[in-house]
Image 1 (cartoon, rainbow, N blue to C red):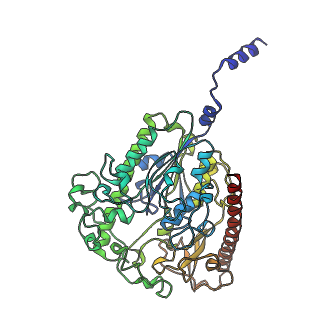
Image 2: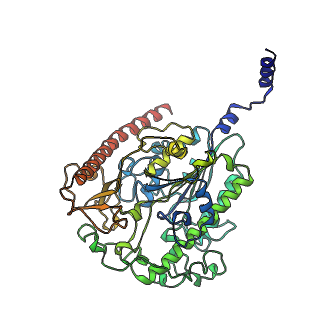
Length: 525
C-alpha cells in the first residue's frame, strides 16, 4: 500500500501539459518531399552507377524503400491533384485535358486541409502545380506557411520577371533548388511548440523547364547542344558547372530512332507536338547527352538541399519524431523508344522513387527494400495514417505504414494504372500491373474530356501492349499477339475493365457527394 500511495502522489504531481501538447507529442511531424520528372533508380543507393547522392543514400539506409511504386497519373497537374486528394484523375476530374478544376469543396478533402483541421501546422514550399483550381491566387491561404508558386519557374528565377519567379526574388540564393532549401529552413523557424507539423515540399527539378533554363538562351531549344556552364552564373558552382561532364555518358540506344517501332503512328503521332514542340532534347543524340548531364546535376543539387534539411532537423531536435516520405510526380522518357517526356504508362515514365523514413521503427526494420505493388495514392493514405486522421470516402489508396513497421499484411496482387492526358496526340491509356506482367490498352484521346469520354465499357481498344517485365524490363517486346489466347491476358483485360468501370462509378458518386456537401455548407453560412 505504501508503494501505491507514493506512486499516486508522483503521478498527481506530474505536469502533463495541455491536451494539445500531449497530442503533439504523440503524433509525428511529417515531411513530404516531391520531385518533378524524377524517374525511379536515380539515386546512388537505388543502383544508379555514377550519380552522386550521399545524403539521400544515407537516408535510404535508414528508411524503407518501395521498389514497385507507380504514379497514379504520369503527368504533372493531375498527378499532384491525385497526391493531394488520394484519388485517380478519373474520380477527382482535374487534369490538363479534362473539363474541370479543383473546387473549394474538393480541397477540404485533401491531406493538407484535413491535417490542418485536425491540429497540424501546415506548410508548402515550391511548385503548387495544380494549375486548374477555383481558388486561384489564394492557394497560400490554405496553409499556415507558404513559399510557393504556380506554373513553371526558372532555374535562375531572379533573372526573369514573371508571376512564377516573383516569390523568389528576395531569396538569398540565386538557383531554384538552394532557394527551396532556404524555404524549408525558414519553415522550421516558424513551427509552434504545441503542434505537430506537416511540410509539403514540391521541388522544381529535374523538370525540363529547369534543365533547359540552366542555359542563358532558354527559349532556343537548339542551344541544348551547348553546355549549360557557358552561363557565367553557373561557373564555379558545386553541382552545375563541371560535374559529370568528364563522364562517357551512355544515352539510350534508341535515341533519335523511329518511335513507331514501339507505338504506331495511328495511336500517337509524334509530329503533333511531342517531337517538334517540346522534349526536343530527347530526340537527337547531341541534345540528349547534354540533357542527361543537366538532369543528374540537378538531382545531385536536390540531394544537397535534402542534406541541409536533415541537418536542420537534427540541430533543432526534430529528427527523432519526423517522418519523411519521398516521391516524384512521375518519371520521364529520355530518348528510350525514340521518345521523350511523360504521360505514357511505360515504367520509365510511370514508376517513381518512393521511400518512407520513420525514425521510430526498430533498427532491424530500417534499410529494407520491398517489392509490393504501390500506388502514389498510398502516399496520401500514409500521411493521414501517421497523423491519425481518418481518410474521407473515395480515397482509394492504402497506408504504407504497416509495411514500414514490418507487420504482416495482405497486400494487393494487381494495381490499376491510367493516364488520361491527351495533349500532343497522346491516347487515353489504362492497364494493370500484376506480378511480372503489365498490360496497357489505349483509346483515341479527346481534348477537354468529360465522363462519357472516359467510359470505355464495351469498347474495343485501338492498341494494346503486354510485357513480361522479368524477361523484358525495358518493355521493348510487345507480347500482345504472341499471347492472344493466353489465360493471363484474359485475366489482365478483366482486371483493367473492372478497374475502369469502378472508377467511372466512383466519379458519379463523388460528384453527387461533393455537391451535397457544398449545398450543406452554404446553408450553414
